[in-house]
Length: 223
Image (cartoon, rainbow, N blue to C red; front, side):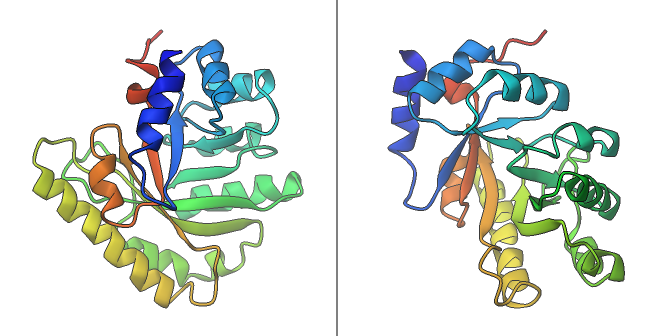
């Protein structure tokens, strides 16, 4: 019952057009089933092996979002079913997703991960690297991936002004890309930013996907 109540509480705080991705990594299948029964359909995982197990166990209309750092050698295991990969941080990874999507006979939607946090431990591309990638012949040749937006993680800090500044930089760059490289492409419409601690701020900067875990399921159980 608690998960259902938490989902309702969070949904009530979302602006129109903002979708909730329930971050379910390390959570038992029963907890995901409870969220599913309460109407949640988009779930975010960050370990491919765990994602595959849960995909097999849960109903097939679940929308699986991969939100963690992705190694190229793991792409093949989820290429047939993943709905959206949030964490593309290199051309090499994008090419591998394209290769595996082609084998699976589908086009996979992806987000380009921007590095905006003042933390070296977080992954992501600089704005310059994104532009370089989008202008490369290698990128233009990819037909089985579809870039539908950007993803970013803010610095893990109590300083809300810094978090807001980082989210604003993502919002501005999104519009630069939307007006330039993705003009006339309505599918380029997502900004994935905001987690349990800062999703209310992220919504002010046009986030369309918020990734919330502990506020739904409680603290994670690490194995």
